[in-house]
Length: 196
Image (tube, rainbow, N blue to C red; front, side):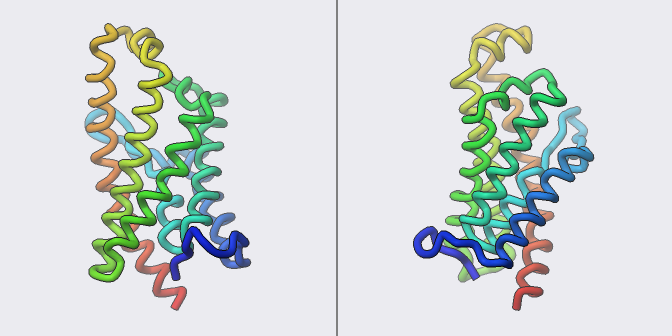
């Protein structure tokens, strides 16, 4: 079921179909805004990374990486075509692409670590790990590249930027991780049954 990093780098017909389908779902969720869930805090939790997590668990890291790359490229497209206050983060290809592909590493290895025990738990833990990798990766890279600009556009002092970033991590990261697990578990379990 799982595809190791070593071995053939070719995609099977089924894997190509999964890449196309899940990448298409990513674009659809972004274009229709269905990939963003309003929270009571006034921010949006995103589920745009879910196809990357699902593809990684179902078909392995190569498939997940391609979907992650598609997600990152779409993030760049969206940042340029529908800019918001912090869209400049995703004008930078390092911020737009690297965390999206790193989702695959944490998802794959956490799932592999717990896979032999409880299927639902392993899927949920992998989903949480992948989600937090994305959130923390984007925030850390944005902080590193744009510390001063973040203070400028948010009209805060430089000393307040870490607090601002931590607030985003808590208000977005935790709900996104929980939503990710709640959606991924039944979807992945259903897909694994179909594959048998």
